[in-house]
Each structure stands twice: as structure tokens, then as C-alpha cells.
Length: 390
Ligand SMILES: [Zn+2]
Image (cartoon, rainbow, N blue to C red):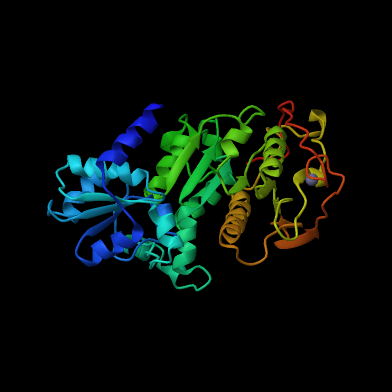
């Protein structure tokens, strides 16, 4: 028998188990129902009046929530396993009458017992996001959704800076940042997450400092590395939307290919001098799928045709405009609002101050997202400078 199974058998022998119906009756007679599930599980519903203490801080929170060690406790989790472990810990803390609810919340729900959806936002979140809460299209449910969302930003540079800044302000719960570079003084003309004092330090660390100062409740996950065929899938996995703010073709193609493989929407942005473009590449979109980047440009241009980084320039405010369009598309995707830029390329000309829209078609013969195609694998293209500077 494995250690885990042996321990479970011991717990089952020592901790009394009650059915969900018994738990409800015990609660009516004064027992405390203690829900030890994680916040994202509890957001889907919990037993009315349950104390939602979570597992990780249970020992630190229980005494304040239940000062009387003689009060009966019924511990519940998702399926009735974690509650056994938690119950044993509560006995060790001195609680005299602790039982575990067999079958957990899954069984509670299937037996048709009452369910309450707890308010997702605490007082400080209500204050911070009050202007979102006033909009019925976002509201409390939408804000809670943003707070549970995970977005990956490829690049903490010209496009990633404004996008990450506003996504953190909007309360997107987890922001991943991929960047292997350090802050250079020549970045500061447009990369607004960084500061003069942080020249020479890691961009990811610098971005984290700015974003956490703006909104401490956002979790920043740093990936201080260059994306390669070996790590791209592992890094993208678990995110819901990818914001591509990369400044080179090898990364742009890797991000595209991994998004195609993982079915993720890829919010693309690029800037050059006074011009920029935005689109959402999402062949796996459930209804009305759109093209991927390779449907438009099957292969990167040869290095000799791409201008060098030193030759290409960009107006400092330009990535601000494009990065914020990317952030806007990201929030729309997370909330399922409006019409995303899937199958459309929005082109911005700052000198004429106009936007032009191009319709983009999915290529059914595309090597990556084409109909019935098996994934052909990742390619590490030779690193050379793209026309885009971010
Ligand atoms: Zn394609």
C-alpha cells in the first residue's frame, strides 16, 4: 500500500464521516460547517453559512472563526478527501468534535442541497474596481472573472508595458511576463514599466515592481528566459490569452505555433515608425474561427530583408496606442464581450491619424492551422532583427 493510501485509511478509521444531509442538520443545530476548498472552487458555489477558510491558512484562521473548541465542526472539501486531512489537523489543534463530510461539495450539489454563490469581491476590491462594477457588462461577475484570469505577455517592452500596466490595473488576476532582457536607457522612451533608476536590471523584475505597486492583488509570474521550441509550450500552458508584444520573428512564429497547438487566442501587435497593427489570431475559436499568423505570412522573411534594429525607429507613443488596443482585446476576450479582432487586421497610421481595417481569411491549406493538419512541430528560426521595434 502506498503511503498516501495508508494515511487515508488511517484517517478514515479515526475521523468520523457524515453525509451532506447530516452535515446540514448538524449545522442547523449549531455546528460550524468549514469549507476548506480553494477560492476559485468556492466561487462556483458553497453551502450557505459555511465558514470559507481555505486549506492553506486553516490553522491560522480557525481560532478566530470558531473560538469555542467544544463547538462541533463539520469539514467539507470538493470530494471528501482533503476534508479528512483538515479534520485531523483540527483535532490536533484541540477541537473536540470534528467530522468530515463524505463526498464533499460534489455530493452536496448532486443531492440538491442548498447552494450559495459567495460574493466574490471584498471591500477593497469593490472600491478599486467600482467603475467596472457600475458597468452591467462587467459587473461583479465580470470582475470576478477577470480576477481569476491568467494572461501571458510575451515581452515586457514597448507593447507589453502599456498592456501589462492596464491589465494589472483592471484586475486580471495572474499576469505572466516573458522577457530575458535588462532595462536599457534607450527603452525608456516607450517602455513605461521601467525607470531610469533600474537601467541595467532585469526587465521582468522591474516590471514586477511597477505592477505590484499599482495593484498588489495581481499575481505576477516572471519567465526570465528567451522563448525557444524547447520551452514555449511549457511557458504558455495554463494561460487563457497570450499577448504577443515580441520584437523579433523567431519569437513571433513560436508564439503563433504554440497558440495554434494549444488553442489559445493570440493577441498580436506590431509597431514600426509611425505605424502599428493589431489582430487576434485564433483558429481554435469555438464559433467563427479566424486565421493564424502563418495564414498571412507562412514563413519569416529572410534575414537580409529585415531592417536591422539600429535602422528601425519608432515614435515613443506608438506602442502605447497599439499595446492598449491589445489590452482592450484581451479584456473583451476574457469577458466574452463585443466583437474581437478575429479575422480582421486593424492598421493604425499616426501621421494621418486614421485606422484602416483589413479582412483576413483563414488559409485552409495553412501548414499549422489548416483543416485536418497534424501539428508539424516547432521551428527555431535564426535570430535576426525584425522590422518591428518594441
Ligand atoms: Zn494558419
